[in-house]
Image 1 (cartoon, protein in one colour):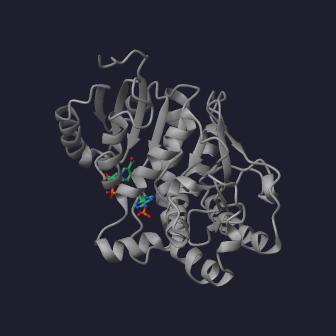
Image 2: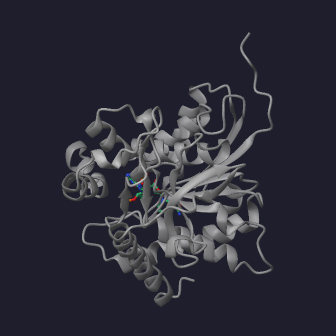
Length: 340
Ligand code: NDP
């Protein structure tokens, strides 16, 4: 006999709900891929006023999909309604990076979106809410949400450690490249790390990579030339490659990575493995405290823990430092603009 949903519903907010990423993400959440096959979901779709009608169209398609786990869908342009009681939030909607747009202008525009969203999450979401920022510049947008939560008048029940940014797509892209190079299935690869910013300075690091089946360390099978000349630049620039080949951005793989991130957060990472998550640094690996930077993380009882004790060689140190400098420059822009 088919099992029936038994658990209390999870309330999930997705912003930018009429956009390309949400068009894939929402259906996978409703199908039970994030919270499991017996957990019903309430979806809250936030859009800007002139995209609300398009989001309502997406809600009609969600309805037509007759997902057994989809309890309720609400479309709104109001933050209070969108974040009310949210257990999980995907912040996808962001001001798009126009051609030739200056980084400071992009950060300024996004600060006006993510600051108020941080306050609204403090005010209306569940205190235990888990937040994933997908909209770019994701790390810095997440830092703006963290600042909003921390500066909330009267204090916020929301923990800064529950505000993360997505480097899981970079992680997945790196895994796929290495699997193809070594002719190994993805499921055999463990312990890859993407460090730093979700930008071209990110550092996909295979130093600790191992074969899950045999325990063999795999880094020695990858030449320094391939790593520095092909692998690292290809992973860092994969978004542009997809745009030039597909003609539009990598929305489905971004949605897939968002599913992976939130599923692992709620349900745990694979035994013996870790994944890449950008979260506020606690000073680990010399990354200044508070910077939202990507680390190797395990999800333990619903909390991300940075994997400790990895040895960092000189080459790794230089690459991590370069990406941290990139994050610090973005943080300086945020401060100069008075966004925090
Ligand atoms: P997408 O759904 O394709 O992308 C949304 C955001 O995700 C962008 O910031 C994009 O960054 C980022 N992103 C992160 N990783 C990836 C990736 N691998 N591939 C593509 N994008 C990635 O954008 P759409 O324009 O289709 O939709 C955005 C929606 O957000 C619109 O419906 C708009 O109305 C809404 N919006 C909502 C706002 C709000 O909630 N206040 C504010 C602004 C817009 P990048 O730009 O670098 O590609």
